[in-house]
Length: 458
Ligand code: NAD
Image 1 (cartoon, rainbow, N blue to C red):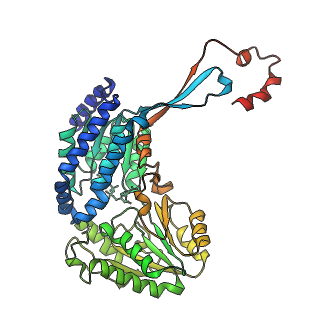
Image 2 (cartoon, rainbow, N blue to C red):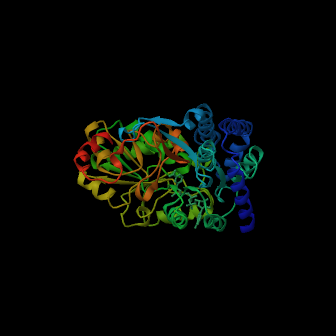
Image 3 (cartoon, rainbow, N blue to C red):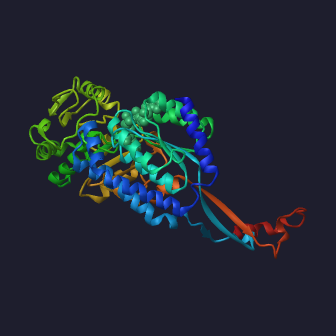
């Protein structure tokens, strides 16, 4: 495998060095080809993801293929604008001059993706990397092999391997890839593996984006529309079987409305997935037996308010847990499954003491009709991104940067920012030669009195 990876890397280096990715119209054409191929295979993609973890077709459209197609449309429409050198006002100190920023591709990019949105989280960064003029090696997750296979087929149909290649495999393959020298690494996955990626990148000072996870709080004030809030929390928590990096991990609810909220959550779970979620075609399965067992173990010793049942080797009903100890395994790790702990608070100090127990999360949600309370929460804590009176929805706006902070990630992407992520911004000053102000040159004697003016002209 190492020899295979080495030969791909050499081919990609030559392809890049020969300038094959530089032409913007050619980049646009290849993105159009990719769009056509994905449109042609939309049904096959949906089948592959269903075979991997029983994701219903509507969720595939909503959270995988339509997002990728929309990213492609955006990149195709804007690539000439994004790649155009941007003129900026020149500094007077450089007079006479012109100044501009050139967007330059990094070169050879490694993209490593997770299993939970296996198509979207592999393809969306890839689109930005190609739009920016890089070559790509994509390593999708081994836990969703049907999706990885179809991604591989699509890429093979659209790109020569010296341009974009998919390398399928497990963590051993990932580690082999990480030993190589890359010009950029874009990783989506757990904070644990994110640290491994960061350490490997450090060896060559390779720039990285790390899209990671965390324990996302969902704060529910006493002043809310209970039914609507419960509906939005249930949707964001249990879509994709709770296997979403920005899903609410746990609820912090004002003790005055806790009972009402629990009843509303139960009702919304039934509304969405019926009383028998195992029979619901809309309820996604757990990706594999290991993860199902991990989740079942998290429930051990907990007070289950609702759900808690497992119907087979890869399933767990939407589950509500009452007041888990913050020291229990359930509250020590990112849950990443359909279990929602509910913890009550009596005052804002208690909210703070829970949230600050954990690393900075990827997202935070607050439900409240009191905008001052919601704003206070948003301003008080550091987290990747979030929403007031809803969950997950900040993800879909291409104008908003998507990424974590601290332990939940490094860097951000989406929309034009994905293109920027994969581009080096190269500043260039073009000096005129018809005038040369002598102030900066030695000898400096008698020039100090002019130094005060420098500040104004910088
Ligand atoms: P993971 O970190 O286990 O795996 C991600 C990728 O890393 C896979 O391609 C895998 O093959 C590879 N990998 C696994 N172990 C490795 C190792 N020891 N060395 C090198 N490579 C290794 O993550 P996952 O289980 O696929 O996904 C779940 C995690 O991803 C959660 O923490 C979730 O919050 C996070 N996530 C984050 C985002 C985001 O956008 N921020 C999106 C989805 C998932």
